[in-house]
Image (cartoon, rainbow, N blue to C red; front, side):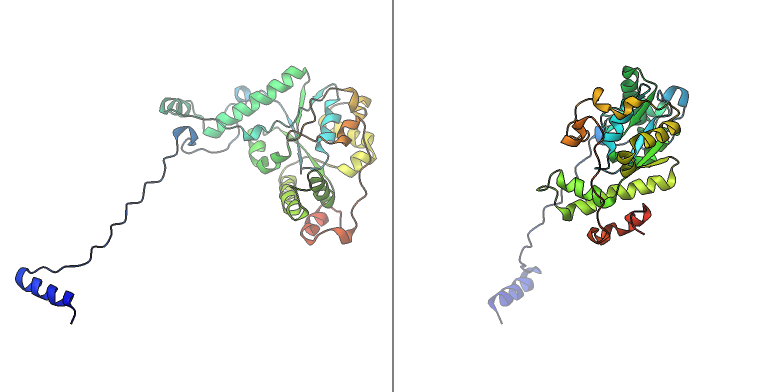
Amino acid sequence: MSWRYRANATLEGLTGYTLTRRVPMQPPKPPPPKVPLEMQRLPGDKVRPAADPEHDRLLREPVFIMSSVRSGSTLLRVMLNSHSRIHSPIETHFRRMSVSLGTEPVRQAMEALGHTHSDIEHIVWDRLLHRELARSGKPVLAEKTPSNVFAWRRISSCWPDARFVFLLRHPMSIVQSWHEADPDKRPMATAVPRTLAYMTRVEEARTHLEGLTVRYEDLVADPEGELRRLCLFLGVEFEPAMLDYGRQEHGAFVKGIGDWRDKIRAGTVVAGRPLPRPEDIPAELHDICRTWNYLP
């Protein structure tokens, strides 16, 4: 029998109490950090078409080029921008713009005016793109930011009258081009899943939205024929200046807002690379290659 037991027995007999080892108290968990008001969406936010299209939208029938990265969208952009009636700006990345409502009064006011959080952002998106179009003096806007494919549902809700052009390219050529743009930071093991995510969303949009499909390989092999077909879809006459885009001003060719490599700076259409051999296509790309008719 230990001395602790004998001491506790004696103490309990005299006082009715016993000694126990004190268990350290765990400090209470701090409450989760409060999300600042300016980072909170309005309650009940939902994506929907404009409540008052006549006043909420300035753009009419905007054109969106839906493509993966490294699909020739910058080439198509400068060809379209060389048309006297089409303005195709640099990649605007407009869908990344969000609205901060950092005080209770402004939030209360927006809800009283009948706006959801997304409604307000759509008005800002529309105003930005309309400004670019108005400054160009042309009537048709064609926007080509590749990451738009991840927001095709929201874009089609924002502009129900939008027109869509789906630009396809051989999936393995997309992978190779993306890898070659920065081989050290973009190894092939990363290039395949990264670009496939874009291609998957392009096909998803192409399945759900009406539009015109253009292939990069056809565009560089027969630029006049493909541009005539595209102009017919857009309701404008073909113009030969579209083939000689180097004579026009198209903004800077800068990484992050479009292609920046030497080929696009040539000013004229350059032949595409040879198509990959079937045996050189990784298994992860087989399904999309078959869907786009690059594999039987």
